[in-house]
Image (tube, rainbow, N blue to C red; front, side, top):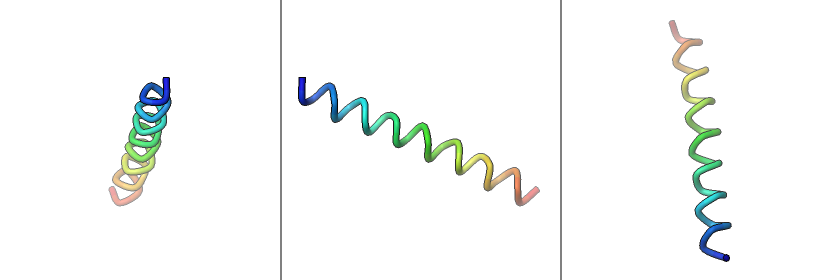
Length: 29
C-alpha cells in the first residue's frame, strides 16, 4: 500500500512538472 502511494505521488509530480515545462517552452517561442 505504501509503495502505491509513493508511486502515485511521484508520477503526479512528474506529470505536473512536465506541464509546467511545456508552458515554459511555449512561453519562449
